[in-house]
Length: 379
Image 1 (cartoon, rainbow, N blue to C red):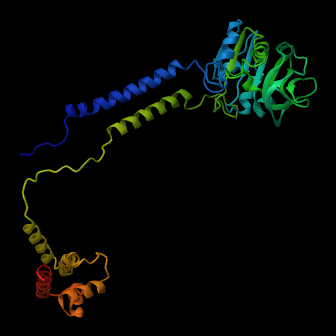
Image 2: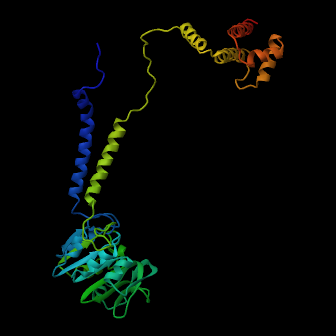
Image 3: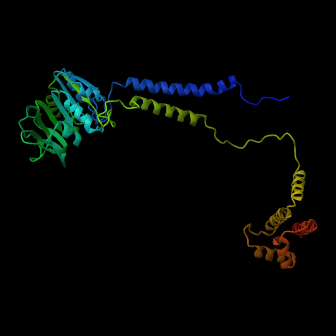
């Protein structure tokens, strides 16, 4: 009668239900977090970030002055302007030239670029170029006639400087280049601001930074605050097809992978201490030795049998005479010969000689080694 040894369906379910439950809870929590934060932005100069490099304080200041601030990370929101709307484009991200051209073609009344890239300057602020220099953080006078800067007065500014084309207004610079540039591009106001840290949570309260930010960013009732991301939603070829894998799906995939890793670590088997188990049948050492000897005889492995006998004898000799286990054979033979009075040549042949070629020779070797070990035990 045979007995099945595999798990039944109920046993398999009982073993898997806890890992499946934990995995489901982790994935559900990740999805909830993604949904809850889908309308919020994060990172440096984010209107939702309370970190020192965030801009939550600036967003709150603008809202207190009746400016409706919309934070977004979607490129589509940066291409949907309306009457009386302004657009802030934060630093970071990696949009391609086609994306910047789409933003430039949108009819925004006012665009503010915070530490823009070269592609952003080419598309939205033609003629403005980064100089490669940076100003140290300190209080500076506007040095220009821009109403927002004149009303604010002294401000703590730092960051990269820009060269501007003729007709542009440059403020807060070193006399040659400036950290703030305003120009009129086809009837649209474009501000290039290199002093990002002046409007962060850490420095907004310094000098006239808050007044400068309010006069610069709060000129429209509706303000879209766009933070570019690290991948473009369109191809450089101009194809308007969406990406094969939307970013939200990638986040869920990472959440699932993390959940699988947690369950694998939790359920992974680890080697514990050795556990002694009672054998179903007691096998005496003599029976094991006899069984191995019969195997040697059946396979005519006289060389293996002789090596086993010599290794056992050498172990007893090493222990009895205090000889190191890795001692040279000549040293072993010399020590044993000095203690037993035997001929060194005969001892070397007995302990390290060639394997016997007949069963009688093997028996003779076994007897001689037994006599030698007897002399060791009973000198």
